[in-house]
Length: 386
Image (tube, rainbow, N blue to C red; front, top):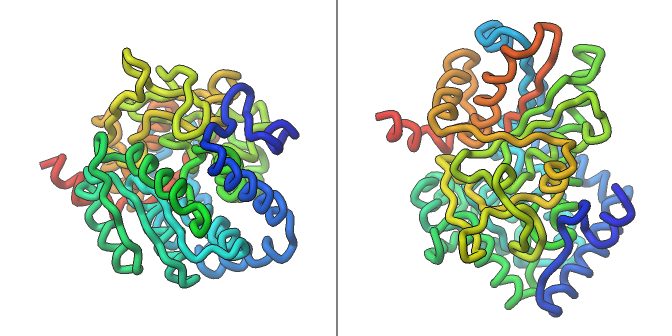
């Protein structure tokens, strides 16, 4: 991590903190606390305890033999974030941030959620640590992910449907930031994506980098070398930045982020400020964030994490789009072929791996980050297919 990133949260030209002065004081204090505790032996010992005993890490790097043979070409490995407690990668970051919140004396925790996995993970951690939990979720997403809404409420959280805008993830973030501005003196905002004002993108990357820390060690054990490509879906960017983190300084490894063709923030976005930070954003003719849509609620965001913006502009990572039809096909194929039902978000990465693998040789290796499991999506997919 460069000193520049450490201090002011910039990745090249992207990142920073563009918030009102009173909120900047909160961000500065959060940053100070994060940098203090992230290297604190007691904090890290407790974090490792909960990652192992509560989340269930480390999770497997699974070689999928049938899928590899079916597609031809490169060997396919899946990093199994779907096997974590609560069913997705989100819990990695939540456990880290909730331990930070506890040390900062917070009693009230707020969060935003799209597909509901971050909301469920936050509600889970708040239940465990006996904290008040408020989850903001776009009204449209509460309808698409009704099962996750019930899960959050079952865990003791209050779910606030946000009717403003499109009623999706961007609007949930707007509402959560509004709450923080009003209640910053007693509230910890547990942000789930690698977005927002500094230190959030750096903090989320730090806690999610466990994904690539493990996968790098595991692939060296299994294959004796690094992968040729790492593929992850991209919405706000948390699972992808976690999957990429320990490979960024390995130029032989291609980093490939996959986004919906109806929310191509990295493919078509331009530099702008969104939610208190600078990144690539989809803008309309009037310069406002464009409405986006994805069948995967967790990818439905008009911007992207600042480090992804930098990785795109610098050329270190590649970003591609995939269609809903390809995603639904991949969702079904992985389920039928390997007995693993992926989240619709993760199915974006699987769909691109299907296109890439046949273009590579049989001794090359692809790691696909399976960011979550598909339990939350089966009813939605059932309706779409019928």
